[in-house]
Image (cartoon, rainbow, N blue to C red; front, side):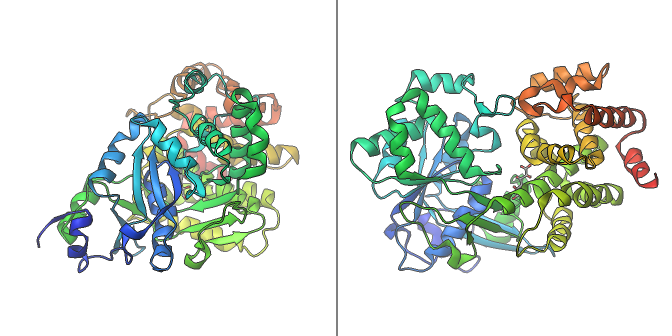
Length: 493
Ligand code: CS2
């Protein structure tokens, strides 16, 4: 088989091997600027948009992918080399691979290289949506103070360098300012991150920043920019070297950075797009009035479920999520956590069969072909726990409900933060708060409560005597008996 470098020139030559975009990419105009072009965006929003563009009458919704951080230089270079094209490899439940080349990213920019180019693009009249996958931590929200974190050095940089910002807040402020000065229409900021009320949070955080730097812009934003909430879902592990070589060997596609993902995908969006939107509902997205219950369900079951499997699995010595999910004790623990602690706080979700949803999650987690990295799941836990796990604890504490499973996971996280698993191997802790997590983890050896003192993560949880008690017990038990034995004992009580 001849190998072809993935780019515009070779696209038609790959048609026999895989599905390729069914539209003429050079006719597509940019209607969306998307910030954060990691695997998830490329497996989700860009995938939906690519399907939509197959209808050749739709020409206004190409995506300009923006790499925001210095760290993103690699993905930018790959997209540039490959004319924005990449292969999406869906790993089906039976192990077969469905491959398609996605063409929805028709422009790409590297913000650190040319901030003004990005600001101009965001302010250009044809752009109706600025969408974001900037990760949970990217919203710069301080759990302790419940406010925008102005102390973040990157925010400090943006305050001093408005024309050459580094954060999304600096970029959006400048783009909105230009739109206002030029008398242009507003646009939609669409958060696609795993944050409860992601549109609300995006709005609140952006307005906090704008109030401090350009207070006169606030009322323009309030009148001209909409911030729909959305629930996004598709498990997208990091691409491994064997995914790349496998694609080359089986299909002759020389793609430096294909994206691999599970077959399941879901996108529930609030229909609040001030400047219009693509008809994503024609390709499977759901538009609803109120996304909040869907978000709550997904974050506190799927994402929290991931954290449970990730942290417990890491301590045991596993490296992928399916290993943890296929350990019967751990999976029974997860099921009990979902049934006993999460389900009661979800209330009634009209049109959703929660039992089926939970069942499907266990199946998705257990998919042996996905090989989702535990390192990926445990990374940035300090931004994830406050969104995925702690709301369940707080809701249960309020109603004097059970917190045993969640407290156990928090205790396991404290031990995980020491950076060594139960067999003595080093754990690679990747977290913006790594230093403080580790300091508090060390202090917790003497007094487990020390870990809960990180207020920007835990808020006031340390003031709950009930939580501290159960957490401390779990902590001591894990240290003494190890995760698996404790989990087993939780059943035989
Ligand atoms: C994961 C998510 O990062 C995480 O901890 O839980 O990336 C998860 O895979 C996606 O939200 C699935 O939709």
